[in-house]
Length: 103
Image (cartoon, rainbow, N blue to C red; front, side):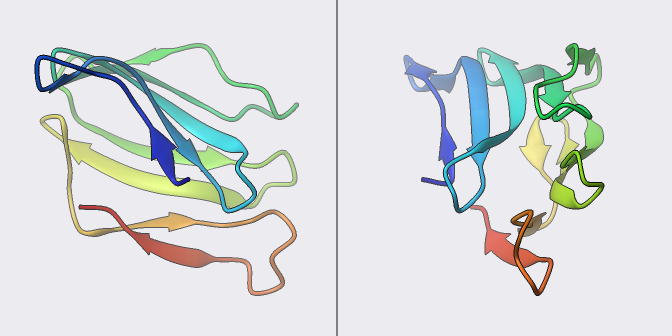
């Protein structure tokens, strides 16, 4: 799975969790009634950072593995992903990067 989230009455609500190809969580984005309110990236120990608030529903997010490689890059503008491609890397992927399409 690439991501997991909850919907309530057709609106995204709660944690929207992105996963790498190994099924490991790499980014958490918090929604309230379809509005992006905060996010948590991977920290240096492989856990998640404290929540970072997004008062404008916009953020350029980069979550990094403890080894310094990019896990995912996502750009949100007013609660929507800006652009069609987000980059997801696997920590031990020899090529270093896999591109995924998000609709």
